[in-house]
Amino acid sequence: MVPLSTAPDAVEELLLPIPAGEVVLRDERARTERTAAVAAFRLSAVPVTRGLYRAVLGTAPGAAAGPLAPVTEVSWTDAVRFCNALSRAAGRTPCYRPGTDPDAVGTAAVPGADGYRLPTEAEWEYACRAGTAGDRYGDLDAIAWHRGNSGGAAHDVATRAPNAWGLHDMIGNVWEWCWDVYDPAVYGPYRVFRGGGWQDVPRALRAACRRKSHPTLRIDDLGFRVARSG
Figure 1 (cartoon, rainbow, N blue to C red):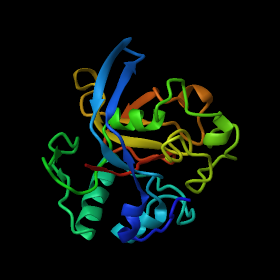
Figure 2: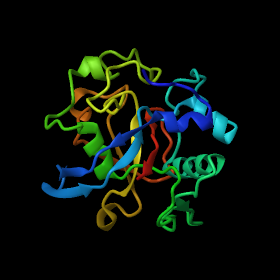
Figure 3: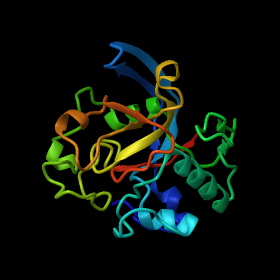
Figure 4: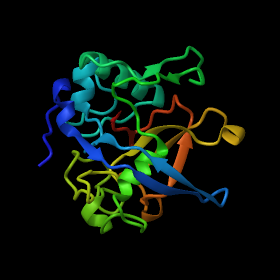
């Protein structure tokens, strides 16, 4: 049972251990693939909720959904700011040194920081697959809120079946920001998001599906979840 408290000091209870391994990352647009090593880390069992976001930053954006709905209409820079604030609230070293430029190009990771952060794209896909190799880790309707069953809105987290490692909503409900730049040579500062959302069709609801946008983008089906190294 996922302990769905919205208190900042309960975040550690949500973090699940992800073992070290490797994942093959495919770029369907460029028709390339690469194998990435993933060190052991910890990842939240659910996306950041509106209640947790409000508890940490004092307010939550977007429509008036309940406290256990995933927070949406948060940009990549908002997610980085939340991670740093959550780290400080927990007495941990913030993982990011924010830049001042509008494209967030100057935002940098702090080496060795023990705070909360966004997962890398490789970590995200590796954790999503949880040892599986197909498009997704289970039957779509059982694991995901999507266009065919969502009723046109996001739903409370952890109301669909988890993957084998106990992670809920990796597919469907809301897309999730990752740390990585998508393809700087082609798209400049655009950052990656993964997982598919409540208004997407099955093609977007796959472990390998990649999308991207400017780090200031805020939309109603895009959120994030937190990770921690070690």
